Image 1 (spheres, rainbow, N blue to C red):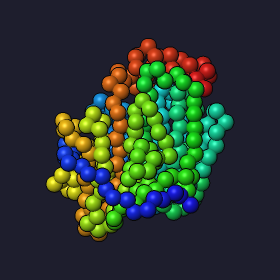
Image 2 (cartoon, rainbow, N blue to C red):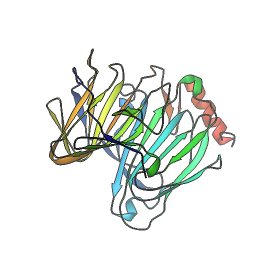
Image 3 (cartoon, rainbow, N blue to C red):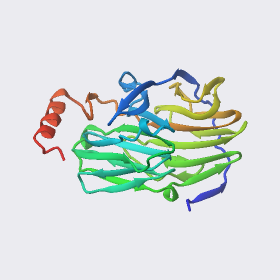
Length: 292
């Protein structure tokens, strides 16, 4: 079973961030026709640096997801997939293979290049989860690919009064997450809040951050955030964190934050580099079969 701490006190946040704006996301299709919501789109990449993309997918209709994501390439960033419901099989050109089940995480560093697939292992029922693209600093964009499957039991958990936290990356309530990254220092928390419960998290004022609500609704600094909405948190000078409170019967939400790289972003589809010349090289390497 997952390691779970005893009931922990919430940290003291004296200057909490408010909500800069709410984002609904755009209906999209990817892979072999998988229906999803693209919440963090390219126009928000600079604002939410180091995060390049954030997709939410969830459907009880098999035709919305059954085609999956057949073989496709990546270079220059990391992909993070977090499953809520369903089963998804990963295979890649580096010889890695793993099965994502509810509560599991797949963390893949594409680095200099990898070709992978993510295919459903179910014919019916609900498929729900999230995928993030996390940028790599220029010095690491051509690093060797890396992959880790994190089963549900290996995702650390923490508890506060009325709150359960799955600590995927970063730290919360004194618990270290399953993954740490030096350059981008990402925080990725899955929060389960009971009715009227509050949660506080310290965050460096320089980190970009957002909250995505996927069940119920929350209040952040006087702003209500309902399900299927992303709240971009204001980068308020002197702020030391964020405080969230569940509305109604409770809420489930992702709290995401990271240290911006402040480097140029050049993207063409599944390749994210720093310059156009590097993008052209990635395309050429893929076409010549030497990407991975």
